[in-house]
Figure 1 (cartoon, rainbow, N blue to C red):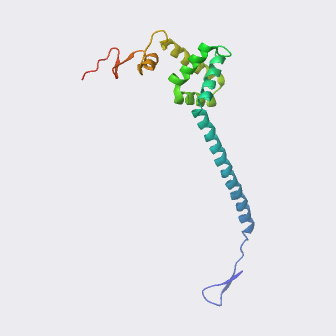
Figure 2 (cartoon, rainbow, N blue to C red; figure 1 turned 90 degrees about the horizontal axis):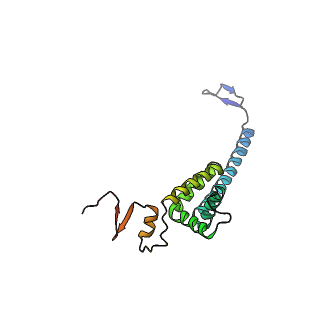
Figure 3 (cartoon, one colour; figure 1 turned 60 degrees about the vertical axis):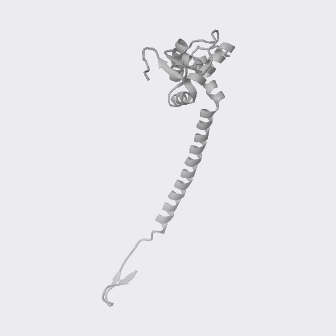
Length: 168
């Protein structure tokens, strides 16, 4: 290519390299990246739906906890009526939705042995503090409160802890 300088008589010859092959190469790279981003977005959305279902569906949480309790020989295989009721109360009242989700995250990031030992130790601690109130009738919202936190009493809507006095 010939380019004229400031004065019209001075012509400078320039040689440049064609960049079309490099642009075609860049186009293929960005096309791959676009499809990769779409794939990652779809897989992330699917993963989000799976984790939401695991967190929301109660039967799945209960089955997860019961499977690990069976692996740790804490309940019968298959669970008897008493074991099924206790594991239901353990999952519903003690672990609740967030505890089961955290245990699932632990299971996802570690192995089954670690998760089973963790769930079994939580089960053992819960069973030590669990007081079966089926023989003595307890009415009101304090029924679950006594089983979960034995040091807490609820009287006339006010919570009192043993050893602490609330003054008005």
